Amino acid sequence: MATQKLLLLPGDGIGVEVMAEVKRLIAFLNKTGLASFETEEDLVGGAAYDAHGKAISEDAMKRADQADAVMFGAVGGPKWADVPYEARPEAGLLRLRKDLGLFANLRPAVCYPALAEASSLKRELVEGLDIMIVRELTGGVYFGEPKEIVTLENGEKRAVDTQVYTTHEIERIARVAFDLAKVRRGLVHSSEKHNVMKSGVLWKQVVSEVHKAEYADVKLEHILADNCGMQLVRTPKQFDVIVCDNLFGDMLSDVAAMLTGSLGMLPSAALGAEDAKTGKRKAMYEPVHGSAPDIAGKGLANPIATLASFGMALRYSFGLSEAADRLDAAISTVLSEGLRTKDIASAGQNAVSTSEMGAAVIKAMG
Ligand SMILES: NC(=O)c1ccc[n+]([C@@H]2O[C@H](COP(=O)([O-])OP(=O)(O)OC[C@H]3O[C@@H](n4cnc5c(N)ncnc54)[C@H](O)[C@@H]3O)[C@@H](O)[C@H]2O)c1
Ligand SMILES: CC(C)[C@H](C(=O)O)[C@@H](O)C(=O)O
Ligand SMILES: [Mg+2]
Image (cartoon, rainbow, N blue to C red; front, side, top):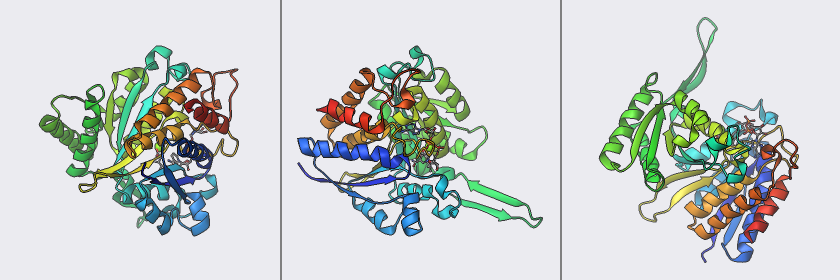
């Protein structure tokens, strides 16, 4: 079995705690021969700022570029509230996404059977829920220029963020969504605000054109982003694949997380374009949640989002679908057995720690 190079970037807060469980899982996979990983580790976010004065070092960027895949924990926290905007912890994450060209962010929201009662909704609304949010990740208001705060002649300040999308950027993310829908339930909801935003007008038009020209076998629905948020909470199982821009994808995925029980359950894969010569794509796997300063350092974090993100790496970057299936089954088993971290525990139910949950998942794999 070829050895694969993984760069681990735990980051800050609970990022470090949940990544510790991924390290244990990697050791288990290596030991049992299910996989062969060689890992390197580096700093990102506030931890990198403290060490280097910037949210990711050039050396770490180079290692990320050379790795077969990157595993990312989480960044940020109140400790860095006053650092300059350009060096804030989140800038490290954004640079990784942009410079590695990771334009397609797959955020699956799956409600495990045992967790249907942990959701914010009634059991019957979320039981069997399986939605794939496809978030455009390297464009939109996150990266558009100008992005600035200027002082006007009258002394007032004016802040500007710019939403920019090109045809090419919309076409390639639309194809990712349609391709996924083809092997799922054949339905794509494209979510934007063409009633307010020019970028929404172009988004709707380009997604429709790609659909008409290439994906007649997939059903396409257009939905305004505000309505999409409401429908996700009202009748979530109407959705299969949702494709949207960077900012709407950020918000809709946190909403979808609560349908599954907790933000601590939602994994993600950030993928680049396929290299024409090697067929490989750059990839970074990250939980959807952040550094959770309110629970950091207490062993309370749910590691499942990060373990499941690693599961996506096994599937998408390494073709290790047997190991990925075993991991999914192990997560499902421990949840069925009643194991709960605090975020998914019902009132009165005993909660286990981050490391107890990680250990149980790995044990269930064996
Ligand atoms: N990918 C990332 O690195 C990422 C993502 C989101 C937010 N952030 C950053 O994290 C910092 C905190 O942001 P926030 O508080 O708005 O969002 P957050 O996602 O860190 O936390 C939101 C809430 O969810 C809970 N939560 C999150 N992950 C959990 C887990 N695995 N287990 C149990 N509970 C969990 C937290 O305790 C908190 O109550 C900010 O600096 C923000 O920019 C980073
Ligand atoms: C930390 C932040 C930059 C990031 C985003 O907004 O993309 C996060 O919220 C996410 O969902 O991955
Ligand atoms: Mg977010």
